[in-house]
Amino acid sequence: MDLQKTKEAHHTAGKKEEGTECPLEPYKGNSHSKNSPKNDSLGHHSETNKANESASGGHRPQNGELYTPDLDQATTPLSTASAPSIAHSDLSSTSSRAIEIPPSLYLSSRDAVLLASANMNPPVTKGTLSELDLPCIMNNINLRIDANFDRDLHFKPDCDGEKGRKKRKDAADYWEAMAVEIGIYAFSASCGVENQARPGSRDKRRTFEPRLPALFETLQDVLKTLVPERDHPSIMQNLEVALLMQQIQKGVLDMVGVAKWLASLLKTHCAPMRDDWADSMVEQITSGSQSQNPSEIVRGLHTLFGILEAMKLDVANHQIRAFRVLLIEDTIPFLQTYFKSKIERDNFHVESSRQWYLNLREQELRRMKDPTQTDGFWPLSLLLQGLSEFLLQFDNPEGFPETFIFDSDRLWGLRACLQNTINLEICWYILERYVQSHKRHIPSPERTGTTFRSRVGTLMEENEDCARGSPRWLKNVRSIALEIARFANMACCGDVRIEDDVIERMLEWNLSNDGDLFRASRDILRQKLRYSTFGLAKRYLNMSPLAICEAQRHSPHGSFDQQHYDIERISTRLAHIAVLHWRVWAPILYVRESMPPTGGSMFQAEHEQAFDHLPF
Image (cartoon, rainbow, N blue to C red; front, side):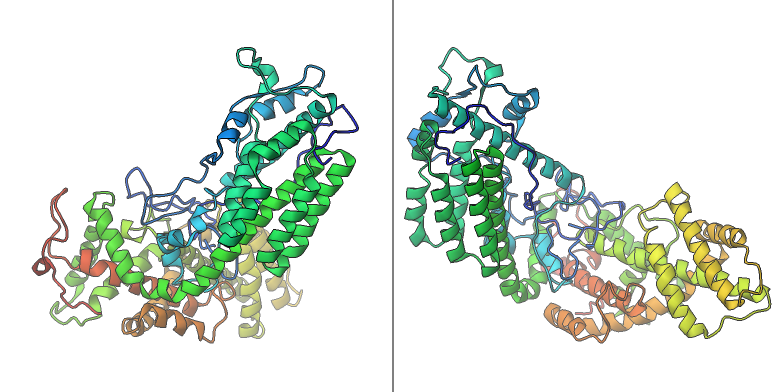
């Protein structure tokens, strides 16, 4: 239906539409899949607003994956759901009046509820896309930090998790309500019925606020952010909201013509890969117009807004690539300015982080025979040792120090890798002991060990989000025990009856207790991690943030995810996090002689700072 007079007077209820587009979640950076403890040190407004969540690992950006993140701006966060402003006075008078549902038109109770309760604005608006504007990108604290760790940093629609499910439902309800509304306009036009409710005679059960004016206004606003100014007059002319609404109410709007004009405009400015999508939008609206099917027209509108969002994402992701070097090189001064401002305004409490570091220092000094024999790397080595203990300890820490609030997802990801590495060594030890107890030996230990770690490591990953002892955890342990039994059977050449229940009991006890086997495996890994991380950190201290990133680019190892249990890859990430963190926080927190009382300035005079053994 062209939103011209319909051939059928009876309304067909719109079906729930599926679509690819989902409203953008403000950029929140990494999101680890595990529900790990979070730092919440920024008072009523948490800086990350994460579901901790990972590295994306969620919201963590994964390498090569489009991703979004919670917008943490150095400026005031922008509203993401504000109603579009009405620019035309005649539109104001048109849209301010409720629409009356014709008495002769039957609506299901669900349709009536949707008209009354669904969102008034499309899922994609100028407001929801505003975080993709260049000023917001440049002031996005999460993105600036994540740019140091992920070369392929992208925005993507956030359709994950509970928020994503709610947004998908809200979007589906909106488009379903829109199909019902279009059907009402078409029915009224075909019957020559005036559908605007008269003031004073409204029956709330038979009236609703129209969504179409806001949709056209939003379409106009978003298009003007995507196309050059020279095309703005054409947009205003072809999408004059008051005129479009008059044509709809009279049943004379040529929606197919509008769709073809939109497709032509979009294909002029979007990437060629979006052309087929634009053609699909025209086909859907044309099909809906010809078949008098409001739901099919809405499918086309849904596709249209998906294209607009994709175009905005294309522009934003191009800008991230174009400004990546600037974002990385400016990391240290930008973060120092940002955090100083937060602390001065008493929005970020870091006293406990300083105390954590000072405790590490005191403990190490007590262990040293000659406390005066320290070098320039020693202060940073304390930080690395403290972080390593968080990552290696058996029980989950309550959280990381507040100063690591924007790195916590990455640290939780590293902890998961290291814990799995320890558990893999426990599994290998159990296999060796079981085989030896039957007077057998594992053939080709190196090759078998590689295969074993690959197969069991995959099963280990399924336990990352499980609490020890939970039904799901126990089920995964049984699967791991069966895999160990399979390797034991191969080592024994089938000559020995393998008691997988014995293996399972050994495995369950050692994986759920901080026992000797765990500690021995952890201590060996700690030494390897310390040696590798310290060496990398010493090298990174003499490099710029960009040089550190580029050094990892030329690493002979594969990507971080491909080498999940490679100690060198874990050490590289940990050293990178620690060196950037040290450069930001050492001069403003860790090496200061004293902390001022609450309410006093932390940054009053240069002579108050103690740069004792400061390695940069």
